[in-house]
Length: 424
Image (cartoon, rainbow, N blue to C red; front, top):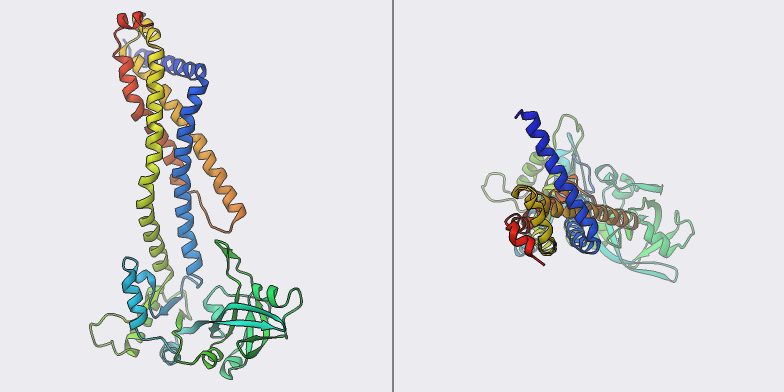
């Protein structure tokens, strides 16, 4: 027999098995629906977990890396350096020396020719205007060039200048939440607010940053760094130093990090020793790596739990298919008596199970897409449906149909035609 004829005969038999499987599904609509529901839920859960973890990674990167990719940040201690040991991070925060204004001045002198150096610090004070008071306001001291080193932007008014910083002027740029709470519709530019017991002139309003997980990012007041040190004390708060090359095209982030580390080790008396850094350097790449490791750890814990849902759905598929095989025992006996082979029966049952699970996988994927769209429209959480999860949803649903359909398929294929014809 010619190869083309053999192939045609094989395809015909497979098509016939598929047709019979689809007819069986249509005949038992309720049972088929119950089988599909389990797969829909299982696949939707797995895909949603993938989307949430991908969104969480994007959120960590977006929320933490508020500086440009070519900027590095020097901090007292960064949690990403101790991602596997929270206790070590706490100890580093308590034992490491603070980064002070003198350190900032040193870095500016040593790096100033080729790099732009800035700094910022943070504290908390109540903000008042007239009879209105806003508690727990984040007061952030910043060098005047902070807008060039971060994504901070002025919406109206102006940023404080080098003159404001040098003379420690009481001027402030405020976030939108402070505007809404203390000014309630009136123009804040040129007006005064009190931080603690000191009055500040509002010279600018920052561009709104929105909220993350319901927590607003606009409840802050930004003041000149030297004014911040005058209020909180020059040695009472550890600062963050930001460094960016003046020529970002020829100087790589790695070179910037190397230069900043060398200068800080020199400042701390570590240059000629083999002691570890007593400070942390944060870069955009290190943040992305940290976010990837964090979500990877979470995924390692959560994904096995979601597999349970698919396992349960697979057991449902197997039980439903076994029930279908039992009901069609006489029909299978007739087919085998008329010449249907063992592989024909096996194919029919496997196609039936796979069709059900594949349909459930597609519907589960559609449900996950709808939920992702819903979350994206209602929240600012950067949830993303990764492309690999789409292929995974289809692949997993087919695999569930095949794996859990094998037992019923083998049972049907091994039926003795004479015994099957006698079955009532």
